Amino acid sequence: MASQTINGKAFEYSLLIEFYEKLKIQTRVRIHENKSFKIARNYFINFSKEEQSNFRISSSAAINFLIDIEPRLTNAINEKDELVLEIVSDKEGQSGDVRDVLTIRSEQKWEIGISAKNNHKAVKHSRLSAKINFGQKWLNHSCSEKYFEEINPIFQMLSDIKAKDKGTKWNTIKNMHDVVYVPILEAFKKELIRLDKNNHSTVAENLVQYLIGTKDFYKVIKGKSKVEIQAYNIHGTLNQSFQKIKPKAKLQKLKLPSRLIEVVFKKESKTTLIVSLDEGWQISFRIHNASSRVEPSLKFDINLISAPQSLFTQHVFVNM
Image (tube, rainbow, N blue to C red):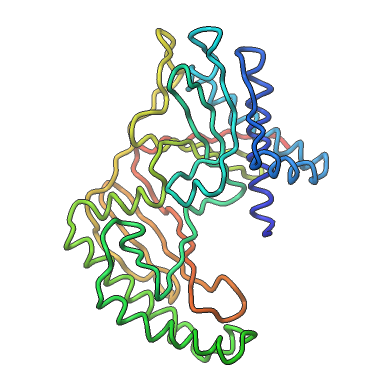
């Protein structure tokens, strides 16, 4: 398992534990010790005491801020109103829910979720292949036959290479960027533009919802000397008051885009497309081979370059 995944799971555990430690003195709180919790705990305890402390310090800083802007974390409506803390199964992410840690009050029919990131801001790692209909999967609008006609010869070539020798490395393909990456990206670019043209006003919105998730959440990004907290408050479910108790800061609702402005190659790049949408959204799609050996699929590393000004962002500096 990649170290990035291990770090991410350990950070999820430290966030949940810091939630528990801070909230248990203020409200009735319980940890749901599911399989995901036990996996994350095992990764966390395998780090050195110093590294564990760094995770906890970053988590503590983020949670102090979240408690200030989410009064329902600390306030119950009655004795039955228990706050449950849970680490989400990775399967949820495949269904459009990017949240890793949940805080749930069933009595209030309320929950908030956190997407935990350790030193990286990628929003999605999606694949392309001859069989993947990215239009249907991402945007709820099927890709055209023309798109598959353009990509199939390239993925068939990769399948043939693998069939001859499963150990063949990507770097043995001459002019790989020109032969594989560029034509695949060109086909993807044309198809994204076509889908937007034929399904105007839904593709841009659906693309962003696919990338950032279908449910509101806070993204907590752990850096070396600071923690960044972003509020993806699309549906207005974050930052709610509890009775007469109001949050200490007010979050705006996040505006989704309604149209695609342009799709272009990043300057002097054969691996990255820049997708610009209205409302200030801009996304980069960097294509790469997920394995050192040739296989008939490619992976996108998708990053948010810019978001609307209505995306609430808070930086908390920490001493470690």
